Length: 195
Image 1 (cartoon, rainbow, N blue to C red):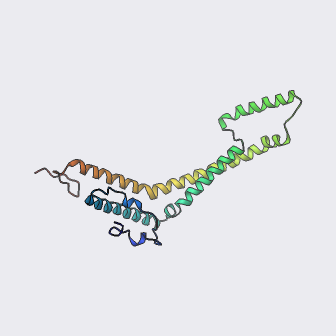
Image 2 (cartoon, one colour; image 1 turned 30 degrees about the vertical axis):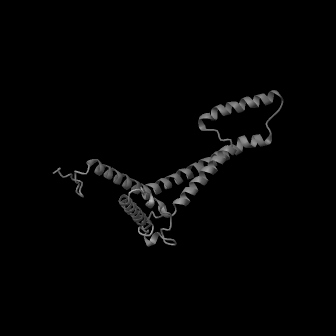
Image 3 (tube, rainbow, N blue to C red; image 1 turned 135 degrees about the horizontal axis):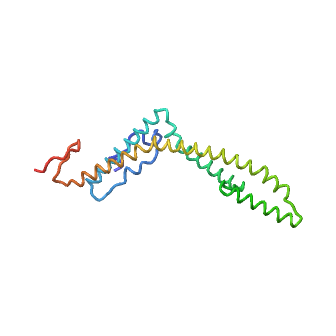
């Protein structure tokens, strides 16, 4: 089957589209006629997808296809850095900041009752360090927002048309299957009357 229904030359090893196309061979192998039809339908779907991505590669937004893995990696690194910064910086969400300030005041009062004070490190962290961590969190948050917007644009521009096309093909095939063998359907989708 891989000989009779070979992939186009641009998809073979070393070609510009050298990546796995295993979905071409995803079909029922029991019925030979149905298997051949499924191979051809899968091949047509793959070719349409690659043609669409070729048009995207030729456009201004080519990075949405060519740099998709790097976009995902950057998004992951920013989110990991943001999470680590929040954990290591003892980030307090804005809705809990008043309660945290009250907790610090109670803690200071308890230390004062014992005749103790906060250490220099504690004072520095609460007076300077927390503000630095919050500024870094804001910057990382905006970077994450931009990275997610680029990733969403990449998905909408490069992948969504293929998903919609496959969904529409499935609906058309479902309608044709529901008509039954006695009905005939023209290319335009107009149903002819039964004879």
